[in-house]
Length: 107
Image (tube, rainbow, N blue to C red; front, side):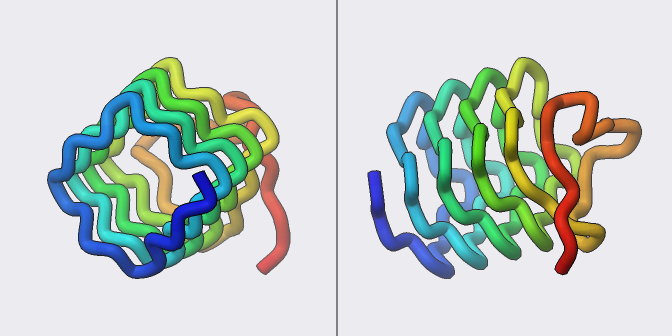
């Protein structure tokens, strides 16, 4: 937890079940990574690339997803309670972030 992974290239990495609470993943490349069951609560994923990332069962509560790119990500059973996002956040087609508990913020 509290790891500084700002801008890290973690594409395709196996991070399943990892404990990354309060981590700074701003601008990180996580496309195709396996984060199922990971705990990322209160982490900052502003501008992170998460296309095709497996987030099944991950804890993303209180996370910052502003400007994050989540197209084609697996968000089934993902905890998004009190996660924040903005109008520039890109969700998988048909996904309703507010129904999942995420909160739209300005900026």
